[in-house]
Length: 105
Image (cartoon, rainbow, N blue to C red):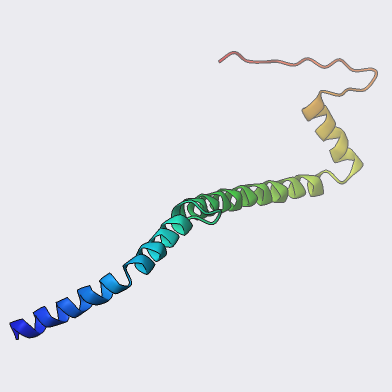
């Protein structure tokens, strides 16, 4: 049994010796592809991270669009537009004075 295993190992080593150059070239090719190529593992990881960040940013902007759509729907009438302009931009009529009170924190 022990001799059989040693014989198998010898045959395997002989085959490896025979194809040593090919194995070195193939190994070098895989190292080059996985580390230095334009589609290397590092770049793939970086791209996936960027995609994740962009998806999160997309969700944020979709939420902001939904909030702004609700605000826009609320100020469709002339009265609400006037109220919004007075509160947000401190606009006033000709015969009014606007006083802004700012509290110190």
